Length: 211
Image 1 (cartoon, rainbow, N blue to C red):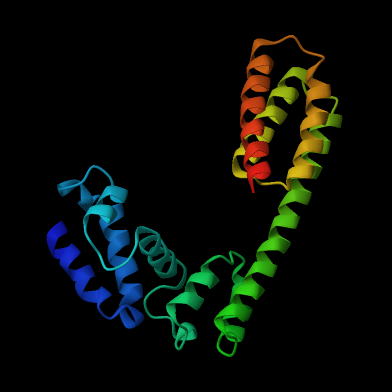
Image 2: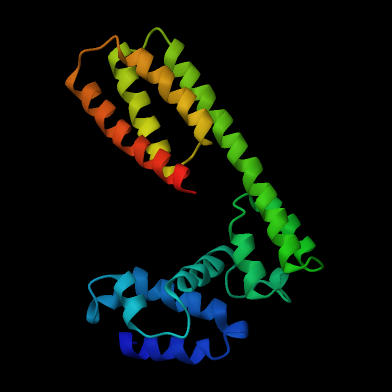
């Protein structure tokens, strides 16, 4: 099936999106994975923008997530609308998600959103705790080369700043500890890390102050 045929197929599905959204997600994944978009577009994102669907690009990715997580013939999700299913895709723990699928049958959309938010916050807390433990291990493992350890910490810090993976106050404390640790080294890579981290950190502080 050509890109044009698949595009028209998606448009026909979108007229009845409540019943066909999973099929749309499936076809979109096929177009992306088989790179059928290359027939007329340089990228999958450009295809989503240029194909003139009756839904947004963000919705397209959500439909793909729903299909990827739940499949096409999943009786457990019968009766759940697209909004609820999209919310459930944010829950990565399968056991927790199974529990929420059962609850979702009787919860309102807003109630389900609150439940999902609570699960995500718990996951974030666990992630922060694991990273904190890893950082502590990085500092105190004597067998590690100190310079390599400092560079590894810098990479982790830079990634977490860019993803906003930590609350800003915790991130600032962690950053200050690394700066003190890095003063032991006169290394060009460490100096470059400092410059890059400083630039990224100033961006975050500016954004926070403007809110």
